Image 1 (tube, rainbow over the protein chains, first blue to last red):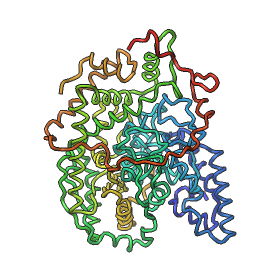
Image 2 (image 1 turned 120 degrees about the horizontal axis):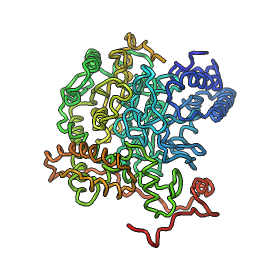
Image 3 (image 1 turned 30 degrees about the vertical axis):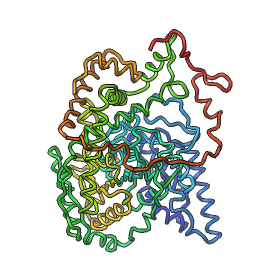
Image 4 (image 1 turned 90 degrees about the horizontal axis):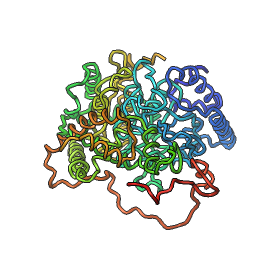
Length: 503
Length: 100
């Protein structure tokens, strides 16, 4: 039973139905695995041992009832499966800090929409995972609670901002986790940790109860060890929620049902599909090993029948500036609520006025990266600068989106690197904010355009994972999953697939 | 696009309600200028005729029926408050001699 934690979630689900093991045994295996290795990894801020065991017991009861009634087939696909939540997903009665000291003491009075959905699906919520503070970062080093380490090399970052969720899945603490992606924060850590991560189309998943960073960019998405698992998890959380007006009233397909079991059938999807290779994504500073793995992946897709088309996305290089105006501007508005009046850290200076109190609360409660971005955003929106910065960035946003729209007239999906480097050493990018920002150069244009993006592992470079990114039309997550599954099928026998993280 | 002076940084910090140490102000002056320099590339693009994009999902005026329904449990919210008196959250005074 000791290797239960290394199975994909869908095999765990099959095992539960077949009675091979119970949900109780499944959660114990994961809690044990977590306890054994999280001291070194620090993926988790809190593990809900009691709640998890109770949820597993509920799942076992539901399974027993279903077995007796003869309708095991109707049981939700993820019943009894352990799941981790990034520290900005609200769970009623539990602390949430968004990786920040400013939310010390905050206990959520309500469930996020996705939390309600995960409970209804019978998943076992194991706890909250570490993250860069307010999702601002690409390495999880900006967490107020200390960094998470990469399971493949403990001296390196797992990526960010969903580094805790990614490391937890890669290390077998949970088979599934939720993250958020505003500029790459699901896809980039997925790439650096050797797992699958999806940023859905903007509007695919409700943001109600998700602590906000940038409201026109944030999306919640799945992290998993294979594409089928990611598809199952997205299916469990996607769809319209009237409490988030930006959540789309568009039907959620059964993503997992459309993924063939058999490898040859899965690979057949590639025959005749048109895949665009955006030349601007093969950046000058790209690590040669990463470029080799990505180009090998493209060659494999071509060998399997895909037509590879050279694509020009001419405004790609304006993405960094566009993102680093829009995201901080929106963040400066979203983070204005942290004033110590109603909850969280609250500094009341003797003899001072309320403005001084706000300044002290926020100055001491927020970390350096958050303060930097609030300052940038405030500046970009301030009188005299709004037109030159924020409005200009919104217009360039239109141009970046138009580049993708034009590309999708000619191809069905784009294929590119997720990150131009493998996981970098802890501390390597902390002195230069712009060096850190460049970690997301290949991912942030996808958020700017509101498109879905999937990262799948495509090999190792210097023993560290490399991610392949697939970018799709709006609402075309289904196709991305099919392409990802096809890629898994054509590389099923690859040596690198049997490599495991060191931990 | 002009660069930020130390006074600009202090002014933005005031607007953002952030108390910053001397060391932070100096570091931010340098870092913010470096980042704002990256924005200059956008001036290369002619966006005169380009409409801004505020959100990519293109929904408008999402309405719902004005049906009253239960909100958060008052106790769950009040116990989070740093200072409380019965059913009220105690806040610092905002009227009076405050300067802004």
